[in-house]
Length: 150
Image (cartoon, rainbow, N blue to C red; front, side, top):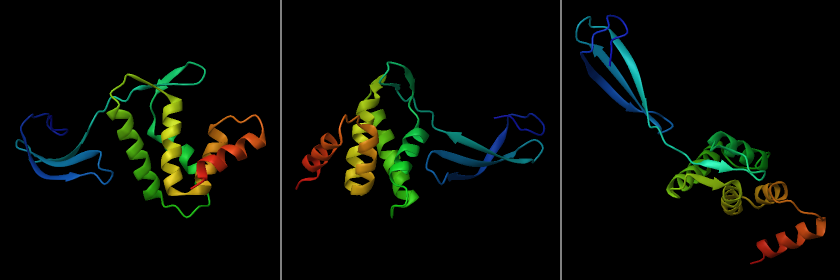
């Protein structure tokens, strides 16, 4: 690590803290040469797989995109942002645990539906109605009745 003030590579760590989001570490450092203090952030670099879209395109996995879709389904529902963040983290960890280089978007959509079903029935129905392509209203109703039946 180079001191931003004098360029020296000799420093000591004064304090280490985990970031609030749990995805990085903040270190407070002091240069041994000029006594200047500065902070650094270490972020874990994860290699998420590419997502294969319906039309065959491939794009990098995006936690933000998953969150945006879930937020749309949960709009005006009694669901906290913390619950949504936890769901996105579970889905992202699941994607990583698959160990694949590419994953079809359909699998991620199904996983989101499973998690939403446990969280909130209305959000589940909203997401399902957009995610799945139903040709008729009756097909949608029958599918929901089958899935929501005890």
